[in-house]
Image (cartoon, rainbow, N blue to C red; front, side):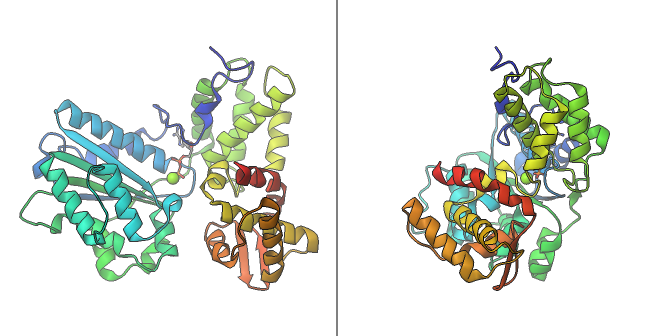
Length: 384
Ligand SMILES: Nc1ncnc2c1ncn2[C@@H]1O[C@H](COP(=O)(O)OP(=O)(O)O)[C@@H](O)[C@H]1O
Ligand SMILES: [Mg+2]
């Protein structure tokens, strides 16, 4: 059953959807499975294995790792063993080590109360719980570079890579820890001990070529669009945009572009997407921010970002001062009937997320002028 003349199922384009097939990442999946081969057959003799995956945004790192951990879970199940994966996106959760370990407990050992435990105790109890319940685990720490860049406490890397040293004489039921990062820049913030336990060489994901991007988008479109609504010329055009220097291979942007172009065609009552729809949407949106990134922002982050947009608009300058941004943030808070806040608490983080450019407190601007056109989208997010 198709959703409309255009879409079979638009949710298949959502960042939350993990496709079964990942064209041009089969090799990486195989590599990850190879790293853990043997774990399902004899888990107690399989050592804690640390894996790092590195590559720019939107090239399938998260998806490939999650797909692989699902396959490993299935292998355990076939051997009548239980393995669970705890996936944590550190950009989404943020917070300190404490909050992150609590989340880990929630995912892997929901019956275990975390109240009143120290960070170290949480890990110790978790390991004991897993052993007592004959349960195995994989831990995926996504966007680790973001956490390391924004947090003073980097010991999480040390802790997680030494889980097998808590009780060295007993097997450690966490079989793998996978760290995913955009680059290895964060190494410079780790101390030598952390760096050495992280060790080894990361698995580097490279960007997709034009042909690869076309194949991938074709396979995604097949599930999302009616065959007659989406032509291969459109897919090729979106693949060209995706592999352009501006978009830098970000497939997440490509999927957004396809979704919005489809929505536009639909709203005009047409039965297929045209190059004109793609051009129009591409001209309006900006590759430096995707729907997923907007969804990851808290309300106060969004208000701070909109305040920057408005301050720039009203001053008609490339940069504004912090006090201008504050003014607009206060006004917005008032309009929305929420508590006033300290924008500077959020600007730093927006800077790390590369949404706001901040050279000094007197020079605050935006990465990409067309972010300004996103104001309605951002406001929509606040009202959600
Ligand atoms: N090889 C692929 N096949 C199908 N979809 C893909 C592929 N690579 C990336 N995607 C899609 O592109 C988006 C971005 O991928 P993601 O794994 O989140 O990237 P990263 O973690 O590298 O930033 C996701 O929606 C994902 O489903
Ligand atoms: Mg990712």
